[in-house]
Image 1: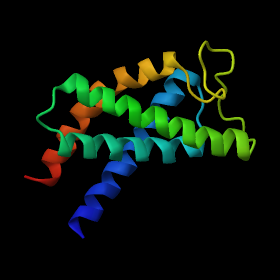
Image 2: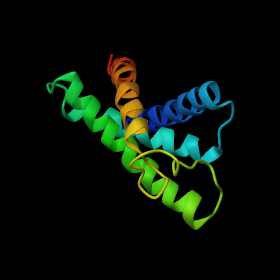
Image 3: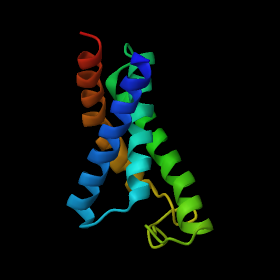
Length: 128
């Protein structure tokens, strides 16, 4: 039960923080971004648990992969299938279906650094 609470707290924190970051940079967000941000932080949290002895930059590359993959999957569902038009990277070079692009993957890599630090702090809170 304690593990479920831990993951729920990490998920909730990721959802809130991701929406906050998006509002800061875009001026608005969408509820699906909260769901995606929560899943992304849980993924990064698990990477940091399992690979804690792996160099930080490699864990951030994994975090970048997690966020980019989630963005592609959620984008295909939300933007292409449900036509909600939450974002569109079609004008960006080397985009994939207008849902992901190298520029934003680079941003997810950078965002993974503070996310890894945050995961370490959250882990301490649950295992003190």
